[in-house]
Image (cartoon, rainbow, N blue to C red; front, side):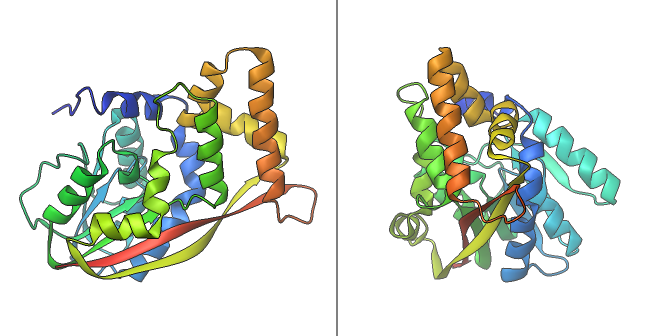
Length: 268
């Protein structure tokens, strides 16, 4: 059933723009590491919330779990199904809303979300729903962007060039440890937060900017809103400067050094 309403439609439009799976390829390692940190066991019932192109769902399936993935965007789910099919995994990918999950209470042993649930408009409903479908003693695992990370700074930059009220940088609240504890604290115990590195590669800072403005929904929308050539150039220049500031490559290319928060908690 198509999960659409006035609150989720803007997010759907953002992630339908461009070709997110091309960017998501560099983030596949995040799901792999999260599944090891939890750890996911063979036979675990796993839900991946905001699965996008299926990175973390496939990581869980590699560990012989029984996996379901939900996302708002049908095109991303089709891409995820194709990937799972090629790798020989049977994953139940469904259209779904993180704020109103269509599963009974305590349906899953593990509930995951790597940079997915953080984009749902109502974080309190999202936290409550992820907890509701996780059994007592089960695990909730997330990955989020801290505000001082490379991607955190990118979201804040894009917010300045986006329409008023777009809340492009709202997901960064999930990257604040105090806010994270307040949202998940009522439902979990043993909340563990670890900073992990993640890197972004391109042949040059300018090529990275072009890649992002072509494939990454929030960047596409920021460039569209900044419709004058001068404004678009200013945004592109700031993005290139951000990549250069985080570049740790020594061979003339760019290797943007970023960080994310890995969160693992036990359901009460």
